[in-house]
Amino acid sequence: MLSTGALRAHLLAAHLAGPVATSREVSLRSYRLFAARDPRILLGLDPEWSWGQRDLLALMADKCGVSSDPGDTSGCDVIDPERTLAALDAFAKRLGEAGRGRVPVLFGTGHPHRLLGFYAALADALSAAGCPVLTPAQGESVDITTRFGLRTYDLDYVRGVALVREPGAREPGSETGAHTHSPLPVRTVLAAAAQAGGLLPELVVGDHGWVCGAGQLGFDAIGLADTDDPALFVGEAEGQVSVVVPLDDAVRSDYYRPLTRYVLNRACLSQ
Image (cartoon, rainbow, N blue to C red; front, top):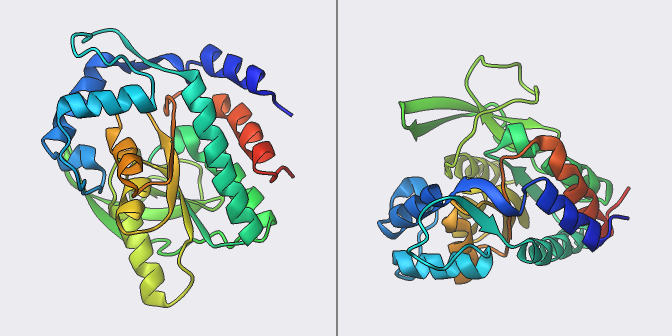
């Protein structure tokens, strides 16, 4: 079993917490755009409260441990590992509750190159515990606006985790996919599940638009977020998102394996 101390050391060594690769400039730009209600940064969330840049900076300082000084405008951003550990415990608690209740769960990621293995291990564990891991709308197309214009992507599932990929880019089921912040994939998946009259998720696990899009629709959602993704933390503050774990969401995929072991142990889901 991985101890809290060992995981804290790993978070810092792998730059999942502490000084992270996300720059202060990128984070502050995201806060400005969120305050202006830019849909690229809202990730499907429709905030109930008015969030100015200083409000967001104070929130992110509280949730992540970034500097609260608006005059601090350059260098690497910083995530407090103690906040990451506390959020991982809450994340694990919610997964454990889902496992004991054997509830339907949906997994989805906008970071398939980095986080697919993390989510897939959780999906395997919950499936073994008796939870239906849902895979609606497989193969359906989603039109997403990108900086290159409107692009069509296909929904796919790899080891129980939803992602999108460019048509013809890879065979269905291959472990690659496109990076996206859009909430449209989760909206498509949830609409397909509802129209089919099948199970709806009682828990959605993921990142970016998968979490915010589901939470905005009233689904219980938990996930991971970096310092330049304020929407998830706003969702948590307003009650649309249950748990958000602050960490760098784009390091090497194998660096998340100790987090997987820690979460599954805490959730009593280790196989």
